Image (cartoon, rainbow, N blue to C red; front, side, top):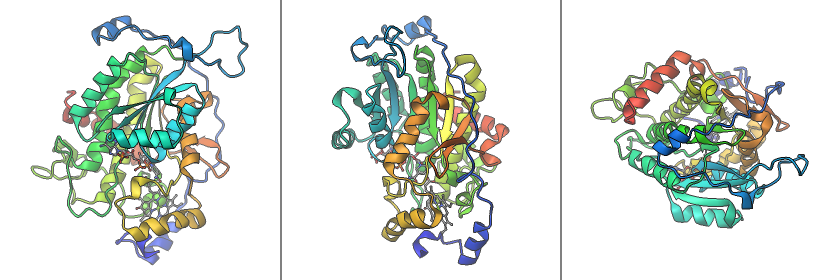
Length: 390
Ligand code: NDP
Ligand code: PMR
């Protein structure tokens, strides 16, 4: 149990924390009256500008839409990019989507060989995936990935920003190729640039439901028990981020404080959830693209905890299974994220999805900070500058 306790959290504090009402994990399912979006929009001019050839119809791989009479138009195979699909949630989601035969998954990974091996050993059908190199810890690599993807000639129907690093035991910050603290640089800034660039591609897709999904987490939400385990997420006034997050001229932490790896991860998840909402406010109406985030459950055995001490890795899964009951298998979590990718009933934009004990999805409440529209706007503007978009 000691391994599960952050150094600043005493047993006494823990029991106090447990008294905090956990509104989001086991909340009741909310009714969702969601309508599917059918707004095909081909921006030919934009495609010309981006020098992309005609979108392939992929008729050979079409699959009849479920419950549709055969004379009706068949839906072509969708293309989904999933970052960090070489392990954990990303791999399980890729598998779940590819197995339906209705999706081609672009596995956007930093380790090409690892991703190929993972896809093979997960039994993902060869024709339903492509591995493409992407290192989110380098803005140059993000731009190169976008170029490579565009040259593939595939349309883009769904983008899933899933990859992440978590460095809870690091004493000193490490940095991306562009000099940003590694967790925020990878989890937020890399994905921010990627999704800003690929929004143009999503706009061009003629797929009935186009989505941009950014994986969030309960631990970034301080309106939950998990989010109250120290160190708590807090972006402050973003002074560290505005200063470049480089640990030289400015702090390596978004709020300008001392480096703390666990906090940096939680802060990055707040950024992910704020970014999703800002995308929704800026682009949903204009483009018809749906923006969503989610907490898939505590997938306690993934590679995310690889940097944690061995005792934590041993105790964390039984702790989540038998004590918090927040545990979910990689397989189940993959099915949940696959639902957010393709289920017509989860097409609503601006939503942070969670699942209750019976594995039914519901629209969850974000914490005050993770739903602060003013902070989201500021985060957007500062991030634009850092990644070279403004
Ligand atoms: P994993 O470590 O299993 O997966 C993370 C993936 O991100 C790996 O494929 C990893 O690649 C990839 N990645 C890391 N750095 C980079 C980079 N610089 N460029 C490209 N890819 C990179 O962890 P999870 O599956 O648990 O995490 C997936 C998502 O789920 C994350 O966003 C996490 O925040 C979220 N999440 C996880 C929870 C959990 O309980 N596990 C709970 C809530 C949210 P490689 O294989 O090469 O290391
Ligand atoms: Mg948590 C319902 C209670 C709950 C849930 C759902 C989680 C999820 N955690 C809960 C409670 C607690 N955790 C309590 C009471 C403690 C103190 C003993 C505790 C501790 C703890 C630690 C030390 N928890 C952790 C850590 C981590 O290092 C993980 C983390 O914060 O990663 C950022 C973690 C997590 N707890 C979760 C989830 C989902 C995580 C990890 C992953 C994430 O947010 O992405």
